[in-house]
Image (cartoon, rainbow, N blue to C red; front, side, top):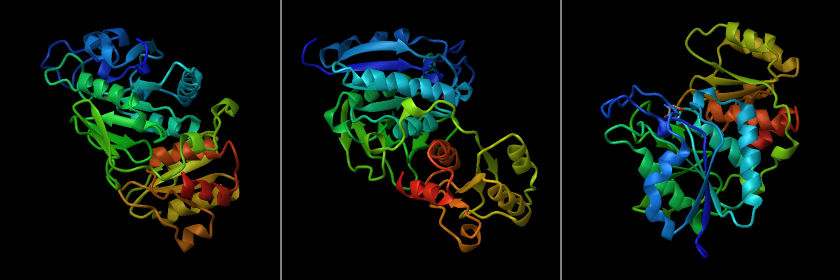
Length: 330
Ligand code: ASP
């Protein structure tokens, strides 16, 4: 229809496309069983306010996605948004790694048109399924001129969150997605997006990372800090050829002596080490002991997002100082 926004919906799988044997199966179901066409069938009412087109790009649980899949997805979204008749993109995605995909796209799509990710915590067949409303509200956000230039957005449970801030906080409840430090950017009242704030960090059209230049992405692993952690996991990552290591440290980026020793040697070999935190909120700040060894502080990024930024940063530079500057900006 002329004059209404044209939104492209890309399906990647996940619980939003999940099917249980009975409507009472809330956590037992097959992920990614319902194709996108089937999900969108109930939405003929939206036809008066937007035009929808669909593409099933993958149909996978999000725990199976790879960085190569994300590269492929980013290239496809970029191509679509370069078309003058596409006004926005909605991506349906498994919730397990949704925040990583959202942040990857946030850093690699040089666009201002809206890109919105959504998913579901309950399968499409369940009593109280949340996916359809999440999808309708994500479509309304993607069709809204106010969403333009705000970076990649995540819409679930009637909240609009920024890709850099949002975290999956719960294994199974519909209110799983939150931005614990800074709160949501806005909400969706019925079908109307209401924004309260803007993101100041660099993203999308102000980001340095051009997906078309990225072929082979560097290998970056995450390891967990805990009481009495030994060096074995770090040694495994180093032996496996990691170019970068993110530590989900205890507290404000603290690392015990045995692990610190191995990581110090890793930095001396040219491996970049980032200190993030296993705490769910709060910044990881610079600290003399770690700065002297050129460890990088992740700032506000959690370990899984720090890994995405470090992976992309390593395509530009291996200098710890330059990478720390990127962590301050993105
Ligand atoms: N439980 C997940 C979901 O919510 C499965 C996945 O991430 O694909 O979609």
